[in-house]
Length: 574
Image 1 (cartoon, rainbow, N blue to C red):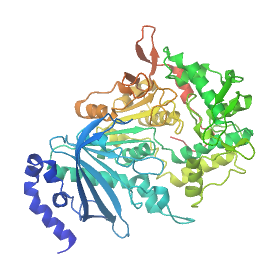
Image 2 (cartoon, helix red, strand yellow):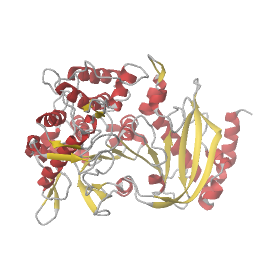
Image 3 (cartoon, rainbow, N blue to C red):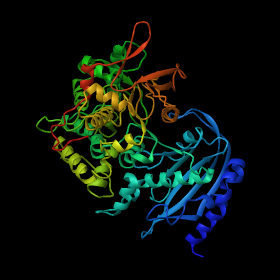
Image 4 (tube, rainbow, N blue to C red):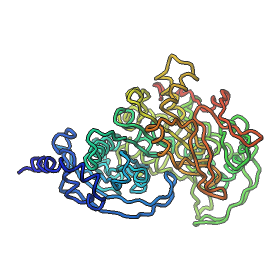
């Protein structure tokens, strides 16, 4: 008997008892290889070109697992069946691994959740999976076929120097997550015997995981009931090259500030811009007003001091005009040699992480330190070279512009992930929560604003700005998180609340019709830990009254600070 015939027979024999087994038996009795094999989707007709391997299934029962509070979900105690499966693509000698956590039948709430990764990792390990299980969802992750759950895409992207593995590229770009969800959703239905009962499908991820979520919504709109993306790394060629911009600024200006000097500029900015929202709490909630009213030059001459650490000597001095010029140039975003805007940059309250320099103990001087996220994009995906970017000799602002446009051409259909027409998702009734830390120091917050604006202008071209915003907010809401860094709270602004319960908010929106007019958030650090706050939905901005109440206000002047005219780029940049 062939593998496919054997599998069909197993499914037919088990189909009559699946519903009763799922509803009446404990998780311990269902968490077995034999039961999971009997509920596995058909290997021959489920996904064209994909063969599932029933013999690869593993099952491990986990009971009373205490899950600590994280940025993405609160603390909980959960039970689940940890399941792994291998599958292959017909005609290729490959293997893709997927992992799913199945909650106990009495806790299951007819939900499925896919989770994403970060950097070049297509998953976040198992740290994202508890956030689904605690809300009654089967939660899944994939290794993308890269060679194991701990292997990142960059390790598998080249067949040899000069030869890109395009199948790995497409798996990383969007295919692996589509296959993860297709398998996971059908297996979930079979495992719990849902038959025609509605299964709600969700996605959650941040950073690269945010880009992965958008890769699904933009291509497979009717596959998802709801999605959450934080600080998405879409517009890939611009985003990755952007990491090198700060390095080229220091090299071009010939000044390499210490981390201590940059930290002083950042802390002085936070202090000055904190009260602009009407409330002094150590959190910059209005970086737009900061751009309008705070002059970085005011920091020149202010003293700074840092203790020695990790081979770097103690630093003492006053902020120089050269350091402020570096910071101001970075904040202005990349411009070409003709002064035309190429791309956007960070908000003023973000740390200058990309501009980090290294200390040379032999010379006693600070010098260039190449940001390797940006460097790897150039060496790996533009030069198809497995080595790192060794230097930035001869690299100018025009060089960066060329890399951004070249990457846009090369990866428009894969990694750019900035398609602005989301009509299929909207027509299918999908709901979307998109959030971004306002002090993000890795992916500029304005990147998310630009994408939201692109969707609004493409999908509602005949409506006024506010009418289009209202129409978009019916199903897609963007929230800028005051005081938050990249996918996390900012230690420099400890009172900033973070939207830890996003999945519950999305579930309520999708399943109960409760629209998140504001986004629930919780202070996760410092003396105010546990305090609840609300975050305004874009384009409204927070404003505090003297009586201590917050309103979400429309401010056309400040909104203009978020918008860039990329007049140096010959094609639209959505």
